[in-house]
Amino acid sequence: MKMRIFLLAGEASGDQLGGALMRSLRLARPDVAFCGVGGSAMADAGLASLYPLEDLAVMGFLPVLRNLPRLLARMNATVAAVLHESPDALVIIDSPDFTHRVASRVRRAMPQLPIVDYVSPTVWAWRSGRARRMRPYIDHVLGLLPFEPDAYRRLGGPACTYVGHPLIERSAELRPSAADLRRRSETPPLLVVLPGSRRSEIERLMPIFAETLQLLAERVGTFEAVLPTLAHLAEDIRAKVASWPVKPRVICDPATKFATFRGAKAALAASGTVTLELALAEVPMSVAYAVSWAEALARPFIKVPSIVLPNLILGENVVPEFLQENCTPEALAAALAALFVDGPERQRQSRAFPRIAERLRLPEGETPSARAVAIVLDTMAHAASLERFSDRMDSPDREENAPNQ
Image (tube, rainbow, N blue to C red; front, side, top):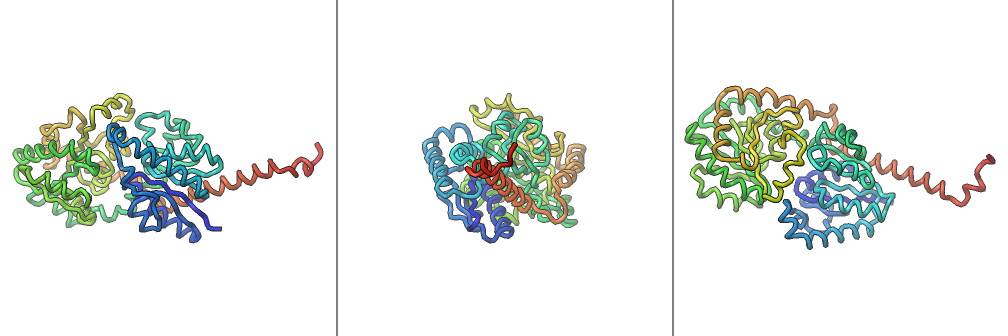
């Protein structure tokens, strides 16, 4: 019989991870078949999604409330599909507010089904009690950050293994060459502008970034601004920047984006995975973020000294971050101006960033998706052995065949 795995991704980043995992699973087990929910990357790897991934792409407290009936309907449909398919394993990928609820309900209905969580929720940052609550329905967590296994041991959560961040496989594309480094010293300097990939982020940060670039031009003079974005956001972004006093050039191609990073003097970025991309490209940056008033209520419960991934990996705050009321054009422009000269602010980041690549590195020849596959298959094998043992213990022949005591 074919091995059958149900995969559930909740947004575009999870779709990319799911696609890579599917390709590696097929290399390890050519007989594997897939079902579940994903986007274009998982479709390219052979998944026929139950419904469009965009149905789940809702972020923030208020947007979730507005879309709650649809999300609940999709949750019910997903649970029903897992039970109907009766797969050999369930792999949930990121988007914990949705995927974990599905996993918990599936575990109650199918207690023997192995469940693997690819991408840890931020239990190390806030709501740390989630780690212990995951134990009844998650068999193994695949961590993208090197400090996560220790966090799960400390918090009493399920087993967690660092499998590597997917950016490891693209580090060569991000590493600047000698020509790229020369471009960083040329004029006009190149500034990368990254207002986020979610519409809520873009709506809040774009007006702030527009004024930041104007103030920065007054401080440092002429510079070239480039704004990489996703294809489905490009038209809206171009419409917004049309009225900016300093207009960035909008690009969509991923290869052009990485080439821009390699030659950039500095970056103005929304907090997110892109800050790790910039750090691997060794681009000094200032980070901004603002959320709705409802989401800001959670701020006192955040237990980490930074929300910036490079800072968390390094264990020190080398990248300046400007959040909520501190996320102002004046503060951001001043921080960026300091990065346009070879002073202590720029040097501090430049010296720290090479350590990030070292901490993310995997053993020679290993990839994140291959490590993830090994753990998924091991988890399935362990569950199968436990089920066989349970079957033997429950066998009606056990008592009559048992040795005399």
